[in-house]
Image 1 (cartoon, rainbow, N blue to C red):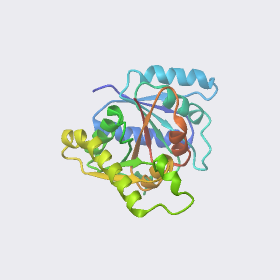
Image 2: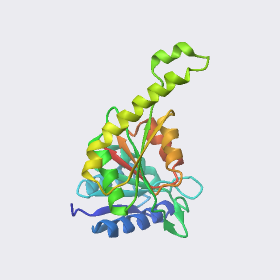
Image 3: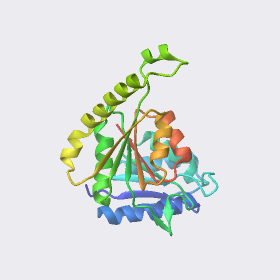
Image 4: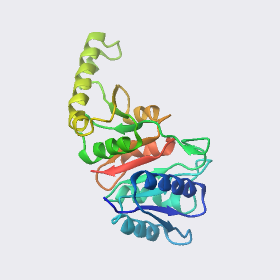
Length: 243
């Protein structure tokens, strides 16, 4: 793939951070970088439509997520979610300010992958493994699970440990089976499989607290509650990959 990386910029801190990250990723992947100036005076819908059009001919689109105080930038922040929700190709959202950077450089640690072991999405998993391969990083695959409905009979009393252990072992096996094709496709990538009895958003935020990159999937034309919750608090760049 030789399509450029498209990054939308204005004068805000989020877009400066996005431009820095996009330039580094373009060098890493050997791709051209296309910088698109966003005019804050334009209607948000018009900006989003323009970026979506440009992004349809790109390897991915990169946008700033929020400023140093958590407030979105004047132009970028108002369209980042819309572009991420509607794009047919991956969109990387980059937090502004000092989030996710050490000494002015973006962290190059592990790539965290949010994956549903019962329904792994090829495009999402492949994006994460390829990103880890290019960075020489480990994939930290996170599968969040819930207790089965029949466990409710034990509530509010303590759940027998042997039952919980059995269910957790089943989830561990599901994740291992789901990732096997990508372990074989990317033998050079180290993989850490992480099964957590948590909500998906909490599991991803904890796992990515010191990561270099987070990859999540998107179904349909909406980000969904998990992705939105992650974007509100994330400290590292997030790739939103459509199914």
